[in-house]
Length: 450
Image 1: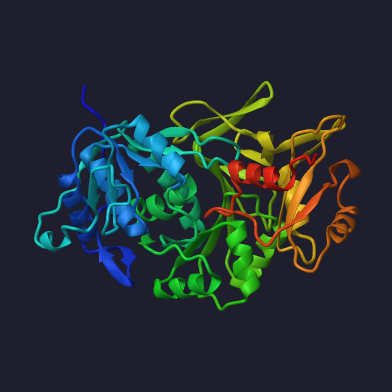
Image 2: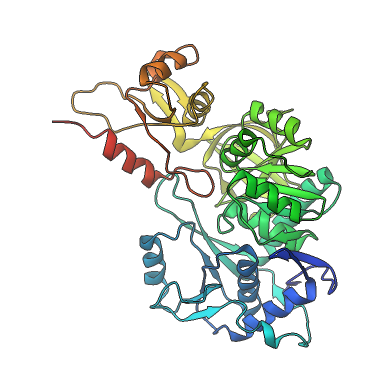
């Protein structure tokens, strides 16, 4: 039986610009030479821990591992405990990075770009990759608990990238220069800032700017059309800064619910369509919507949803098989739905139901509140009904002020007590507050007092 293979870089063109690094254009043949040179230095067998700090180096290492037939481990967090767990599970691990010194001294280390001077005249060829080859082991963010690994095959990530390109390039008018404010090891960042540009004719940027002025500056370095890949948290900060942003063909958001008001403001300020993408580490990207104009989501071509008892199941498209969603959705048809919230974020207090996403949206939208998050502490002794609490960043406002501002918007059972004021909330690069960080806040500020 003939094995089904696919080209590592579809529609490869040697002289086409595929990336921008340090402000300079990188041609397809240069990128491929770097990939093949690193691939030849990789050992056979064990998985690769890709710890590159810039997106271009990460992409070289990622595609080099694919060409070598190796799996890339992509931890969502560089925390020591996560790295230790990876090393324990894979004793033959090799570390690949772009740092001059090995970031993990106990692992074999290869540096991306160490052999660039030797590849100038090397012949380039596009390797053929088995469609079912496992190329990545990605980990959930830990926003609802311990990170969990999920395996991705080359055929499925290519299918997914093409489905996203079909949806996005139709809006932008064609392939774009892609700038992301999001981490590229997270599934959203991997799909939309690495795989989308490199597998579907776009142009990757090596930068991951955080501050609004830096976002505007890096966008200005990229040729139009431009796609900005971001999160609601980063987008809000960008709009609040009122910096001059170069023209973009579209803005893409994920990782947290995007309010229609923020989407409409972004479209008005940036004069571009604001799209939101739905997915998870488990499923990858599944659907998009334009929240300034519609509440409903439309799945990618070939992806269908159906109900099985109280769960929603996705099938088709790039999915390896039937996949149960971790979200509560309202199906309007096999390809159209409304998103209620993650199942783990639904709260039931005194028989009344709400979602933490809705509550977080309400508190973050109050005048004077810069950031806010609800949580559900463990019940205290003698407490008959669970009670929500909230952490806020709201200089100049007291907890009583915030409580009074919440009353018109929430049923009394969902009003938080206590409300704890902080200087900043511990959000990660995706703008999320992971479960461990929220537990630490509750342990520090909400622990029962004797």
